[in-house]
Length: 281
Length: 338
Image (tube, rainbow over all chains, first blue to last red):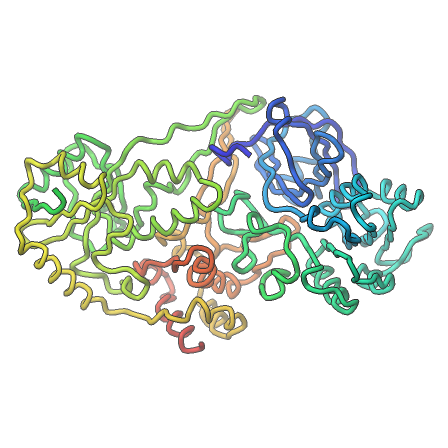
């Protein structure tokens, strides 16, 4: 971030795009590099951090950075087409320009988690902020005790990163559990909601960190079930999302109770959130 | 040179002197609306008002401002040069305090250069209140008719003359610049000021005991008072737009032909769009949640973060609400429910 003027974005160029999902709200991933060599060299982000991505003449919106810094000196954003800015983003292809402001917010304390088993529980587009954790832990697997991924969506065509997740399952490097809400022809994996898939898997809380992200309703039930499984509040992490404009704690709107999602978060432990009434609103 | 007297005969000469040095902003009345505007050449502002309709926050935090300009299809961003030094003449102590409070947020962790540069370039000449407005309640929230927080110079109306007290180096510099119009304040002038201020404090008709409110609000999350209060609300946003401590903004791109700008403009937590996600989900779906957030933000969240209530008791939200929603009354109900 430009510290003298945090509102000034970096210019960036799209290197590659592809669709993760289809349907009425498709998700498209953008692989992006920052234009200025100096900026690119100095850029460092941590899993969980976000950035304001924009198009000059249209506007900017906050997205989580959906890649781990261990993957290379590029950024990835996985964007669901939902509003004005994302509609415009979806029109863009390789070679088109973006503005990028960041990295913003706090991150998952992956240093602190060394030696622990990592369990991610995602739903829908909520897998995007969890992907950097998976990639990071994969890259530094000797420093962690294990990695388990639970991920679900409404239908198989709503699953993000499906190819790479199936690849991970095939080669057995990650314990990966995919689930969809209702039965589908040709679907070989689990059927049912994510919170139930978590209960069925019955992971031990011992030396484990659970990170969940997805629709608010899913998060609420996942939290309940993690508690049933014996996870302590401090072992449970989530990353929140609210409408944001500035990303630096000034514009006011992203607060959940006293917490600004953009500055105090987006990453929180359940211990921090359980007394915050708006956290899962 | 810290306490001087300015005879009212010299008022226009004093204003002229200041205007000769720096851009002067002062209250100007147009129709029913009084707001701070750059003083036209030769104009002499009247100080006969309870408070301006629009707070002076507009000078350091304009309703709309350009963050940067660009040409469509090009990557160069042009950041506007912020205007130079300004003197704000006739700022009420509550509004100056509000700027000190808001500044904490604009300094929090990451500096906001637009706000802070304008704020640093502004000299605030305050005007102590001798006749508070009907809905003033500054003394309930840590202020007072002659509070000096945020001010560089405080003026008090002593009838025939103004007592001018410099509070900062910027204030001293103003007094020095106008020294040939001023006299050393006699010993009795400060006592006289205290009398004026004491009378003003007594004249403040509205009050609420705010002790325990910041700590107690979380326990009232589901209290029916939010629904009751919100029932009449039109969601017009006046209470927040005209609040001197409200600082929320939106950022939007505006394009005309090939010329574009990314700008920020005031926004309000009382609007549904404020928190509306692109997905259609809204974490604060009705006016009940929005009203609750407004009060909690000022009287709870801001206190937790910055150790001060983000309300200065100026009474504008009470005066100007089209359906008479009354903050003091809400606070009284909160207090009762604790």
